[in-house]
Length: 371
Image 1 (cartoon, rainbow, N blue to C red):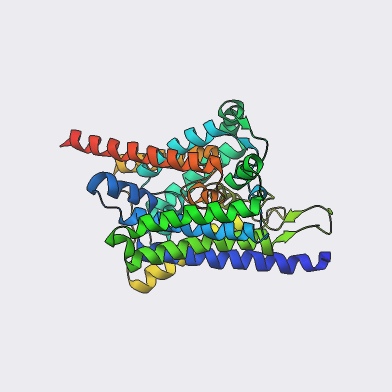
Image 2: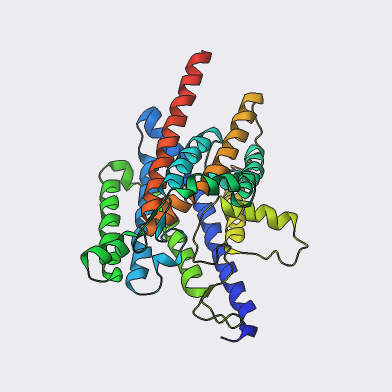
């Protein structure tokens, strides 16, 4: 590829990622998709409908990503999730913090963006605090603490931490073959679980599950296939266009929120360029707002009082610090990361759910005490 062709290809990558994120936001708004709400529904009323949405989306993302691996289009090791260094303690502790925080903040990073599109001013405040906390944990004071403590606890594996790479190393055969078997098998198992109950067969569950899962796969393709250069004309090295991590990326909403805030604040700095993370953050808000306005559900919403404000701001801090420490959120680790079958992603997902369960039960306890 000639260097003169790079701006055009970069624009294609950014517009494609933006469009897919807008579809993600529109579907999430239309179906009331919420991972925090899914956990709360189970704990409070035993309703698994929204959890089945999430599990179906995970299944679709898992099957789609590993099909691309099997076809030789992408490799899990090209992402931030599946490297050989498994920071299991960071995944676990960060996930717990994020899960508890998203309960206090009335939703995870993606739900915050969806709520902003629907007119929530308190979600806009959560967005700002989440951005500051996540940026500090990427490069600031909490980053120093993170790197010096939990990130030092790690297992260095002989190959990538994704299950197909580990299976190929231990049992033989190829990573591509194991990706097809494991991705297809685990995905099929999740689909069977979703279909096991009548609520899992509803149109809304399948719209959310198929739609959101396919958007995760789509952004993986945009980043890892369309935007992949085997040899960058300037550096002569492998490159992934328009990514903050310089690796293949899909949807995630913690670090990209920080990068979006950074881009807005330092817009006149020419070194601050649009990336997939930034445009997908904006895309979710745009897609959600379009549906909210079209269906008449857009409404301004503010904080109910001092305690409500404090809960949301503390929750935003926990999500920012915890999400970066865990290397992702309910979408970043819970869908994009898990689709790579990385060990750290499974640990982070389990920890996020555990943190959310504790958060919901804590809220119930607090409510009981005030009555």
